[in-house]
Length: 388
Ligand code: FEO
Image (cartoon, rainbow, N blue to C red; front, side, top):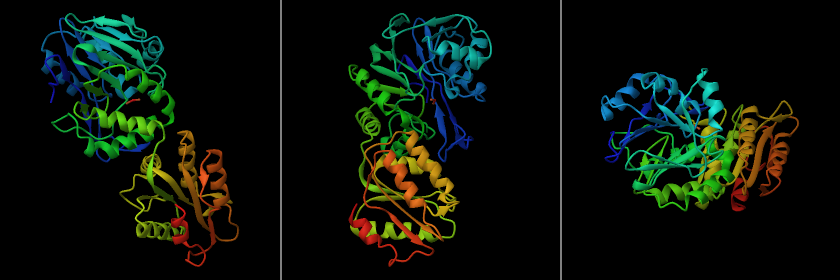
């Protein structure tokens, strides 16, 4: 698993135990925390891994370099899934020089809760020689935190990209490529974790387009070699909020009435051959990815149909949480339809429409608010589907 090339080695780990990434996002297929060694006259380690993997991590490193020491620890990104073991590495290799940018320095000191010395601060375009090869550093702020940078290895046209081009999903023995297998989880990762930062991602993509990239080593998921065009294209489309034609149906239901309307809409779309995905946020599906999956398909499809009963004179809470997640990610260019049941006062559809308008979404009509049980007479979903 370790050898990517003579000089570049994989020393990351798989996490198959964590249930929620960032305490929020389900991990049905696990996640990898990727770290890489560059072996030259000097040895550089690119990023570390999440805490709890100390033994496996150092064993991976020693398998590649034996008793040689790590000279440089490059920190591209300070989120703890990549920076937790800085002190651990420093303890094993006391002379290691940490290479990072100025914005990361206070984060290192704060997160590691100690005074870390021997920090080599780099700026945009700076280089570091390892002997026969060199590394170059480019800032990529807000992809995904303000201190984020990427590391470029010109001699192997290799980009150590931090979270960019990352994906949920643990790695198998073959760590290279696999776009078809990872595409869904990459879209979910992007929408959940990086989705708010479309503009900074676009800025970074423009900057990186000057490089002739032949290999991408991200901090999560596969090393991309043969499928670079596919993953760059996916990130480009997602960060421009460009979507394919189809409907993401997201709903919550207390007694099955709003759910019945959602099912009816799905059947109407099916008859018209319009692609769709359904997400029940009321926790009625054991396999559901909840808001995480709903955000993924909000990024995937150009139309969002949201169903909510009226609850406490407002939107059903899990649906409101989802809509706030959409707003927080600055999603643009979507068409929108709201529907939902009420008992004595229909409020949820109006409030959903207000949220959608604030996001600049185009309402396909005034929405479908219906009293009590769903019936086709109250809300004709064939008509709604024909508007999509
Ligand atoms: Fe994988 Fe933003 O950390």
